Length: 132
Figure (cartoon, rainbow, N blue to C red):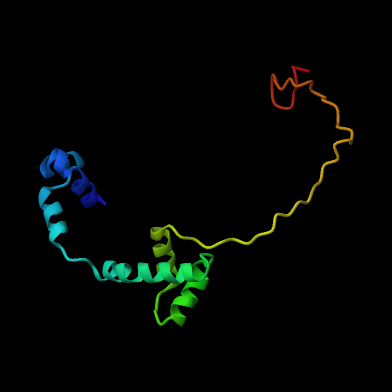
């Protein structure tokens, strides 16, 4: 994350001033730039397009559980948590199919209880209204 920030601002400010502001040694930045991608990052770059294609092929409704099953059927071994992380990075999510349950239907003609405190909620002490 820091390397990306420095890359974004290095043309305007230079590497050393940005590193000084972030309290990061410039050598740390240059070492990170030369370091090859990790095995996880390489696998992520391979899996993300495949997952996106699988998700779109299934009408863009699959969540991590069903997408993992679809990936296994397609011959790709990936864990559900790994897949969920990649889905978050891709900005894709499953569709929730929940019902809206209406438990109460108000009757507009029904009588409402009276306002016993007459909209005055000031109290001198706990459990006392208007100092009574």
